Amino acid sequence: MTGQAPDPSGTLPAGSADELAAARLTLLAQARREVDIRLPRLDDSLYSSAEELAELRRIATAGRGAQIRLLLHDPAAALRDGHRLILLMQRLPSVLKVRMPVEEIDLGDISACLLTDAGGYLFQPDAERPQGRAALADRPGWAPLRQQFDERWERAERAGVLQPLDL
Image (cartoon, rainbow, N blue to C red; front, side, top):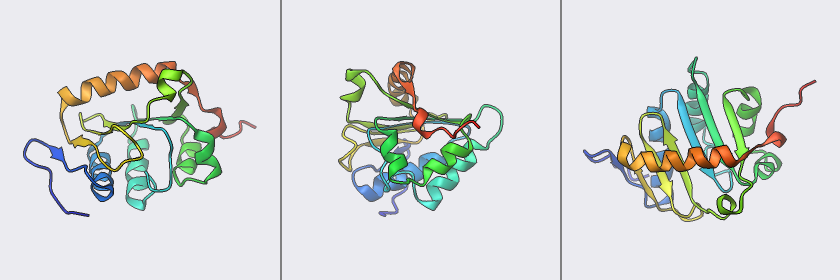
């Protein structure tokens, strides 16, 4: 990790894998009750560190209005791979909601983003490349990403493969 602090405008470094990991953790730590995450693929390098999971758990259990929305292209792969976030998803399905895109335009998008209720964001044009842009609180930069997320969320289908069995 570079140990760089955000600059006065709230911009976070996001040009390497270490900087992306630090930006994710910083953004999760400053989120209050809502986080939106869009990923083509949830692999072990993302949202799986003890610190990230602790922040996601804190947000999920923040009380009334807590919500984590996760858009994943292939939720079955995360389940197959035993991602550490799966257990939290299954324990708190009413708070941690997972959907998968079904429309070609959404499935063809290789970008990733993390959005917080504080107006913070991390955006990667290509989820497989360790570069992007991030800010702690930048509503003008956050708003179009949130609108795009909301539209995709509405078009997506519930990821039933990750839900616990109702017995």
